[in-house]
Image (cartoon, rainbow, N blue to C red; front, side, top):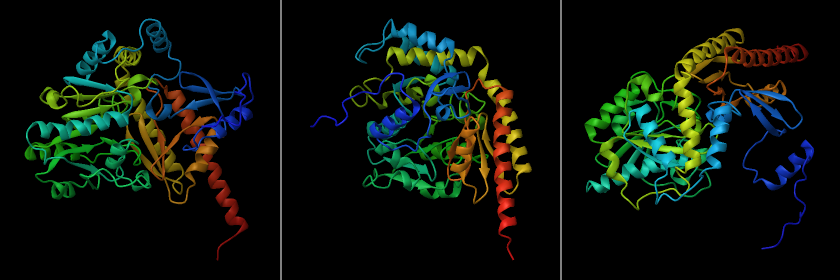
Length: 426
């Protein structure tokens, strides 16, 4: 192994351009990153190294649930870091035990396993389902039914469950024993059932697939099918859980209870943590030695997550998200009415919303134009502008973001009109 050709580190107090140059040189390049460097945050605002202010309407893709630099969360992390950060899972730590109890009490589940991310939580849920039937003397029941356009993570197992070929391309043969059908197509699900089926894995709202809520009655029908066939219902609540949709869990909108759920993203408010929650009957599915996570459930991550849950409960954020989400939905629908050639309509739940754009709109160009105006959003699917702001966002901040989108859409309309004048069609 040879030493790097560049021996000097990034100098302190360096310029934005130098930071960008080092980032392009040293980071792997698997992300398409905007040409500015974020340095600090406050509430729903972010600031770059030039001091420019941005309204954050993506929250790190639904991660910064309490916004940035939340004083209670920052204080809790600092206090815990000065007390105890990590011990092996060969030993209990007090913060993790308390977190498990808090999560089970708030969600109605009985047992918890902790890891570091949503992909890991989904991996654990997949292993739980297969191992459950192995422990029951049915190793032949290993197949998982998932859905086209789903997204469950980037590990090889999670990618196999993700119903989008672009995430699987180039990584070799996918994990066997996975069947994909169209999201919302109950007849296709019925045809795919069989004696080898271990579980159905579903998102209450397909986030990366375009912010698509499950059709009315679909999740309850899946619950009934699983019960009738003795299969498990696994619910990916990585993006929809913990208040994001205006309910504690996304499945609560449909009155459904999965046998197991995966949580992550907003659970730590920005600190990496994931969780698998299961009902008591499945507690024996992963006996000692069958699964683990070195960092999972350490004291620092657990304290962060406990603080997030405390603020959600204390400040009534679930009900507040429902109200703010309705306000956002009205604003996005008004945009679609005002710009019918560019926007088709809104969809989503709570503060997980999407503005679906018409064919031919340059979505990434739209994102760039919004960044120049100081508003940060993300894309879901091919044509949906996704809003997943911090749960603490105000109506005034939502209105600011909607006004920025309105202005950019107006600019696009003006450009199109000017182009038609310059190049009239026959």
